[in-house]
Length: 226
Image: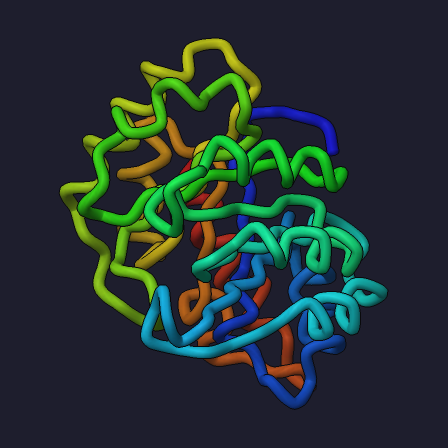
């Protein structure tokens, strides 16, 4: 991975066809996706259960670019090696998921992945100010985690702006996860975000057999953000 602040679209496979994950990953990349975002949920930290390391390992051969794994789980540390071995390029853990986020970030980098830290809507930007030299990505949740298709929480735009100022010239991505579409994308991009996770807004209207709408949706989000 090389760092740049250009807008990157990271479709969330939470909105893909679960029976065709490999083909869906190939389809979204062919249609212009920059990263593939994998939302991992445990039914404990968030009220839903999704994927584990085995799914990541299964889809990795179908992903040419970045596999961006977002761990909405608690505890985190004992699963890091598994996701790293499954091919995750970026592993993001929530600051709220345990008492030792510093140790978690060390473990992610120690496993050979880029380290991300995620913030729920109720968590202030200041909570990670002392961690910025340990992270490669900050994920701002613009919905409460646990489900796709939720409405964007507008108050988080100011948090993005605060983080952008805190980060300064450090090579750290600001990622937005939740409610991203052509209406909300320009708000967070103007505030300083460069990675936009979108689920239903990308996959809506398309399928593995008809992937053209994926490309249309990705281009619409990118154009709005740029």
